[in-house]
Length: 362
Image 1: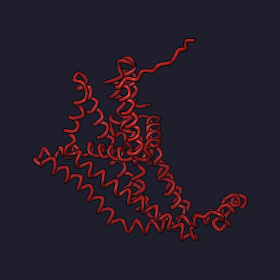
Image 2 (image 1 turned 30 degrees about the horizontal axis):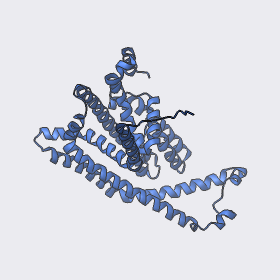
Image 3 (image 1 turned 60 degrees about the horizontal axis):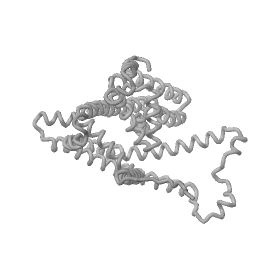
Image 4 (image 1 turned 180 degrees about the vertical axis):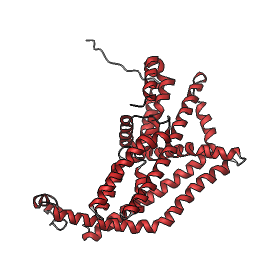
């Protein structure tokens, strides 16, 4: 009796590709945070390269100029932390007290039926909770200690990440050009011109993104601080700092900024809360439709839908850092399409896309 057997031949080259793919996936799962940190350092280095180039044109060696520029940024960060640290801690404590006041006011004014549906701070733990071996924090002091511990770890990790990113930035500014040429050498000879044009387009997108984001964030923080001081909202410096940080987050940053502002303004008066809400709405409109186009120019002409999708995909893959670095990658797509995909998509597709991008409405 004859039986047919299925035979699969796997060549050594195919097996090697499978092993390399598995190794890359394994490396990404364990090293993705460091990869994102390196990408952030690349973006910072690309954004600072024009300044280093300006110093180099004035006979300042590139190594010295790179250390000088990055050292100046680090010094500014340290000076801000030194001068504003104590005030930020005091305002953070005030912010916690005001939030407690708001919670007490909400509990006093909310309907009784709604309050019964919510867990009360002094309610008895369930049988499952009582039988758990895990230690429970004693009152608000235990909760505060837990929050302080998590905040301390987050601050330490953030400081270490910033330090590593700045060190990587120095090395990229000094040796980035040789590294770029070394990587371009991997491309086949006929493809190298397109690779270089793609790299130039990517550099322009990153420079425009970094320059524009820093400018709009600083402006948002300053305007928020001036407004909050005029209205008399407490923790003005802390809220202004949060405004500048959240301004880096597109589309959703306005909500992360407005909510704590309005809550603290409610502790002053209802009029202050309404004025704060109006300020956030007006400033968001002015920034999106006047400031951002002037700052970014034509290098980051992304529709709101493209921004939201890039932000969502980046956040899902790499958290907040992934969300921030996703936008420059999205801004690189028009160059990639015109240089690499035009033949497959057809010339009319690339032509229509360029026409749509250059129009005022998306």
